[in-house]
Structure formats: C-alpha cells, structure tokens
Length: 391
Ligand SMILES: Nc1ncnc2c1ncn2[C@@H]1O[C@H](COP(=O)(O)OP(=O)(O)OP(=O)(O)O)[C@@H](O)[C@H]1O
Ligand SMILES: [Mg+2]
Image 1: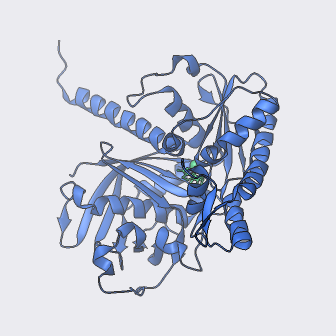
Image 2: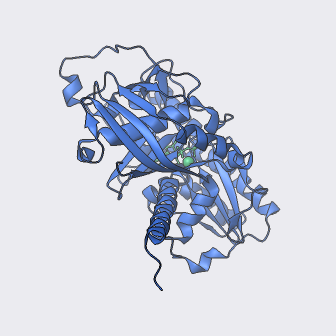
Image 3: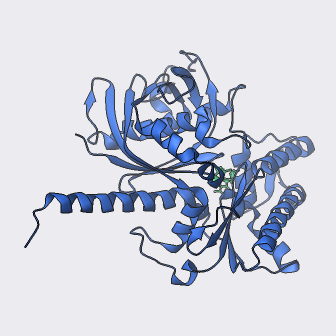
C-alpha cells in the first residue's frame, strides 16, 4: 500500500487554497470552470511545453460522485477566458455542486502530477495512483443541515479519475485519486482553531480561548460570521450572507473602463491597484499617471458600510461578545475603511491580520492543523495497538 499524502483544501467561492504533505506544496486556483470539448485549440506549437500548467488546466473527470460523469472542463485561469464559465452561485450548496468536486479533484491531481512528487505515488505508463488523507470544510449552514456526511461518503467510497487533456506539461496523464480518510470541518470553527492553536494543536492564545468571539470572514461572494462561545461554534447564532467583495471589484473595473477607457484584465488587477504599497490607487492612462482614488474610495466605502451593518446586527444579538476578528481576502481590501468607520461610530473591539496571506489562507491553515493532528493521533493509537502490552 502506498503512503497517504496529506491534503488540506479550502474550496472558497473565489479561489481554492490547498496545502500538501509536510507543507511542501501549495496551490491557489480560481474557482471557475467551463464545459469544453476534447480538443481545445492551442495557439502555437510550443505553448504546451512552455506555458504554466496552471494557466491551461483542461481535464476530463470521471467519478461516480459527480452528477455529470466524464465531462470535460477548463478550470481556473483558462476558464476565465470562456464565455460559458460558471462561478459558484451564492445561494447554492457547496456540498452538492459538481463544481466543488471538479475543483477539488483538479487541485489534487495537479499535486499528484507535480515532478517534485514523482516518488510519492506509483506510476505505470501514464497513470498515477494517488492516495490522499483530506481535511476540508463546508459552510456552517451545510454542516448544520447534516450535508457533511453525504459529502464525505461521496468522496471516500470510490476512485476519482482526472485525465489531463490539452494541458501544458501534463497532457495525456491520468490520476486516480483515492481517499484513505476525509474529514469535513465547519468553516467558522476552523477559523477559531487557527486563531488559538499552533500546528500541533497546542494552545497558543490562552487569552483568547475562553472568550466570546466573532469571526467575520469576508470572501469573494459571501460573508460568514461565526459566533464562538465555550470553545465552540454556536450553531444557532452563526450567520451567512450573500455579500462578498467580487461585485465591488467588478464595479471598480467597470468604472475605470468607462471613465478612463482603460481595460483591466481581471479583478486581481483591481486588487493589485488598491492594495499595493507604492502608487496605490493609480493607473496609467495613455502614459500618464492617473488617480482612481475617487472611484475606489466610493465603492469600497459603500461595501464597508454594508459589512459594518452586518457586524452591528450580529453583535447586537450577541451582546457579550469581546472581540471580532476580520478574515478572508475581503478583510484585506476593506481593512482601512472598516477601521475608520468603527472609530467614528461604535468603537467595537475589532482586529485584522497584518499579513494578507494569513487572512486569506486562514481556512486552509486550519484544515491543515486539524488533519495533521488527526493523522498523528491515529498513528499513535495504531502503534499502541500493535505493540505488545508491557507488564
Ligand atoms: N492578496 C490579496 N489581497 C487582497 N485581496 C485579495 C487578495 N487575494 C484575493 N483577494 C480578494 O479577496 C476576495 C476574497 O478572497 P477569499 O479568498 O477570501 O474568498 P473565498 O474564500 O474564495 O470566497 P468565499 O469565502 O466567498 O467562499 C476575492 O475577491 C479576491 O479578489
Ligand atoms: Mg473563504
């Protein structure tokens, strides 16, 4: 039997974040897929060898877990350019969408075919047999509805195959994914674990562990507020809202286009413009440095106000809350606006993460800690079981 590789995967509505093995590989892929046919046109013969595989994920996915088996997809950056691309709809259930599984399988397959991991899994001809121990999560709402059990059994029960079609470097490779174990954690709880515990689940934040905390996770399409009490997520109090930052970023892009005639490639470009250290909120227009501060300020302030209103409502219902942490990519974008609002208005005890990566990778880090801990504990107990009892 081959050794199982650890994978901690956060399937965010905006992007997938994944951590592998001994933290030796990380992947971040936009959560976007588009149905396709077998032969996507390749521009230029060399493209397949020289391009980054992550910019050309083109796969067929075979799995009994899917509603639509054996379909072909463009995934991530490559799908962005398709006109039939789909992103997850905020009202939908992550656990029941094929898109969640397509993204998950594609991410694992990309880790399995990575040259650095060639020794990990057996490979015969063009087929790699990859075994994973997976830690992942679902929104609290879906866990509350009991959907985690169904999601887990879809994954563990069978072999899932990803076949790379017209993908640079990996064309023609097939990966058979098998799960030795799958743990599905509720998202809000995971964020709490990451705040109070280190990689070996030792408590690093004694101060925080018994406090009443809110965690406001501002994502691409949604915002979740977890309520933590008695070291646990208060299921009944947690709330999810269909409000993220993607829409505001898109609006900024649109206004820059109509006002300045400048076409930005993606929302990522917008994020870059509003968060970079030097020359923030400026773009080049026909070679002249031009401020877009008026546009970004107005749109982001509007969104910050909405986010602040959500905080107020949840805080009002949980009046004994001691601190609220803002996490997620949206927290990075809105940090200064929310802080200013808070200073001028209610003055809640709120906290942000300095390091934007920490904020965005919060869930993936938490799943990593939790699944590592699980593996260590089960290794220990199986070792104990196989050792003779000393008398
Ligand atoms: N380095 C960054 N700095 C600032 N903002 C970022 C950065 N990376 C991503 N973002 C933006 O933050 C937003 C939310 O990203 P995040 O990764 O938290 O969402 P998600 O977890 O995928 O989505 P959801 O939580 O809705 O499922 C995205 O719209 C993204 O453009
Ligand atoms: Mg998220």
